[in-house]
Image 1 (tube, helix red, strand yellow):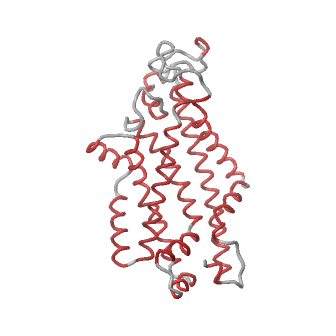
Image 2: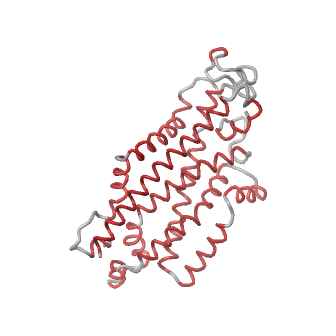
Image 3: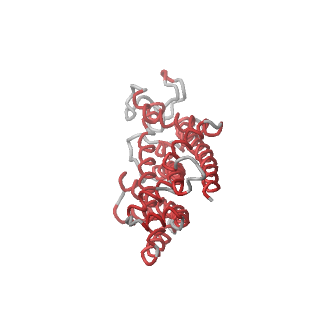
Length: 300
């Protein structure tokens, strides 16, 4: 049962289908389409890039910072003489995978903690939220540097730390919304008929928060792309000689004035992905707000 089932005199879309419906509505808007195209293009490039070049990204094919067009190389070479295009095409997969996994882990854990704190309330809720407030004080980069100084660096560690940086922010958003929903009639009715706390959270609260969770996932994925690229830039992500966009930006700074392509290409990809994700998330947010207003007005 959901809030939509209790107020049968006011029909509205079924809450469990909101995310898919909002997604389709978002894709029908100009902003949503542009955002999806930009982000999708970069994600597709990151996935298919390694199959689009026959040059080994770790092979030295020329002198450092060869200009574009030398020996048929479209974007020249980097600071060591690697083919720039090959490095670029092979450098996006790790960033996109780490960003996606970090966002999923962070939003998933944040949603669980926010729901528990909002519904259980009392001492448990207070302890959970105060602990998250402490974690919120540490920016992702600072937290990663702190952890790396103690136990070293690795890609799983980067993923976990970035995910942890998303948990308190997601939990606070879910907590605020779940706290309001926990007082609604459909939750009270579920409790009256003997539903367990776990069942109420899973069947009543979570479906009505699905749109908000999807929105948070988009926002955190956007942040993850920038954070993971920044960590690679400062040497806490993928290590040489592997190809990585953040690493490419850092390695090729000395030749930026006379051979900028090894820097321009990864910077452009990260920027396009971030802009696309922001546009799509913004459009999704507007559609989520519209559906929420419709459901609320129809149920009162």
